[in-house]
Image (cartoon, rainbow, N blue to C red):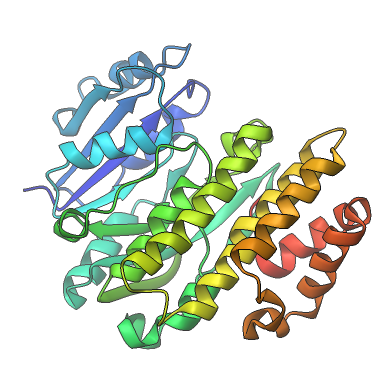
Length: 334
């Protein structure tokens, strides 16, 4: 059994895939497998990979499969999960790359603590600028169910910085939603809620490339509505499976910050002519799904966030100018 299965969805990645693959070939952990899921892009990404790994000592560790039609990264990752044979499962996006010791370090940490999931920090790469993305630091590198509150509120959304015990995913039934927006946040939050033991190293091993043309930056009506829909599903599923009562304040705040706020900022920042009826519709989702958000203890501790939410409701165009500052303060990806 491989120690870690790394799943890589591939879609129009010809310009970046070699750097990603090189970082995987250089891993110091020997016993691995790499599952590339072709999601039917228009370029020759998969052929580039096959030619690049030909004759490499890791060539036989590569598995290639494909979706039936272009389905989005969530569906592609789910296919990878079903094929994976590793003790742990990890994900790497085709335009990102990892440090050589990432998976060896995470596997060692996860194994020593018998953790369901284990994470590191990340480095966001954008136009030559590198920004450290830090998860909350855990005492002794480990936390249990009773320690989740602060981590849930402050974790970064980079699910690719984690390794996940495969049997944990299988037993809990956690998969990615088919939607093409916020599917990664949903997956990670479910894992955080279900995990009994979570381990961590505070080293930044994962490089996340933020591009203006990446899926995370392409916003239209469908994408922002999907983001809100997935955020609402998190609330609904947490209630269905008995997590909401224990983490109500945290989950409501996550909806506010990673659902409503991200969808609103994406729309205002990327759409040339925002429509007031669309803005009003987004605003209504907050009051409908988290009607008492103004009394949320985490919200009350964040004056800049309170000001921004007020402006988004009353003066959305003014709020748009504050987005860069809010991104830096709250570590929000838009």
